[in-house]
Length: 118
Image (cartoon, rainbow, N blue to C red; front, side, top):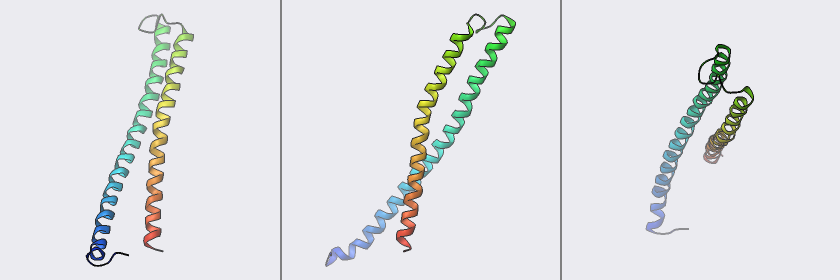
């Protein structure tokens, strides 16, 4: 147990550290939530772009001209599936990290509440 002048400084130091942790936690929470929203938008854009590519492919094949008119169906769909699998792996990992971060933030908040209100 601290004695003398050190004992008087501890409550002030504890308040400063707690305030810093709260600001840091708020910033982490803001960044995680913002990144989660951006990932949601990227998911919609990626699915839309892949769907649009398939639609353009079929339209070009039907009309007989355009960018995709001379590409055979099997390689085209293999490329689409490969892009989709790579997308799922990469953005799935990022989404998992964001979800873990958000859940950890909730746990920290819960434990701080339990600690302050026994």
